[in-house]
Image 1 (cartoon, helix red, strand yellow):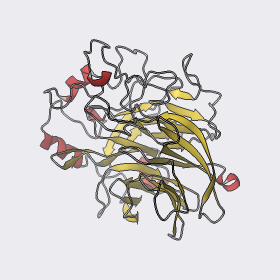
Image 2 (spheres, one colour):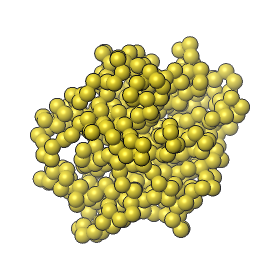
Image 3 (spheres, one colour):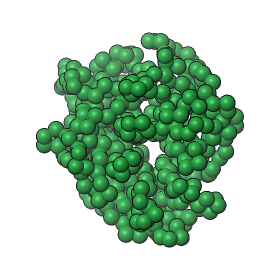
Length: 422
């Protein structure tokens, strides 16, 4: 049973109505809402300690921490950002790039370590880097920066194709699984060679130890960087681990169609290959067919998907099949988490994904949180749009994270971190 279905061809008005109207009321009796923080500059991610201490990143500012009493300490800023205990001259933001994912070490009580993914100018071309930091005892500063991953590609300049500028498609989510492995998601930089490359670390999901070494159980194809868990992705900004099995599940942005949620398979290919002159495609701008044909060339999303598939089964018949394709829409499916706790009722153990939405004529369409219930085989059982609590406005849902109090926290690009409690 699917909670929301779209017909093959809809007007924008009809699509807007379907994207904004909930299909079902929440399974819980109600959701209460509060604003945890506002006035932020593009909050990108959050990570919690058990006592409610919340580390968070702002894309163009830096890393901060909010203490349980509400005190905020700005820890590490970018370039010349003011008000931070320390700044790093090599960290910068541009376009979609900047300071992105953050995660807390499972052994934080002993080692005080956190992990932050950010864009760096330390090399040329620039890169995205996963940094390990040590937080001091009173949470007022960080030290001992170690770049445990320093080779994730970054898009330096505008290329010949007319889509996206510098800093495009970086991935950026950092998470630990229940076994203590460290995961990082990366994007394709609008570079046609990256997704299927064995050595370029974009379009990959990496599984590592806390020093950045490959997990010993990774099984990528021969010749691939051993840190690779899966490859052939487009722009993964969501990864979460099924609470019953520990299985990793990714959420990523589609082109003009088909955001995807995929149950990951060790060594698997997600099937994204935007190179020109493949599978009957003609020449594409700068060799990158990722948006071909574009939305103004008369094709609907299903026709575009047949030309430039998000998962190319014709070329890669063994590619990992997505369990959900957002009904053929590309609306910016971003982060992912699993709801946990009896208070969530039938949604206990369900996956939630934040969707940033797209805009037509200045009107956003599809900004929402979807609740995705899986069957015992991790197949799709139901998709329900979460009814937002009274007083909570939708936005570009960049990050959804479960807090230690059993609440769901959601950061939106518009500068607010929300808290929703069943």
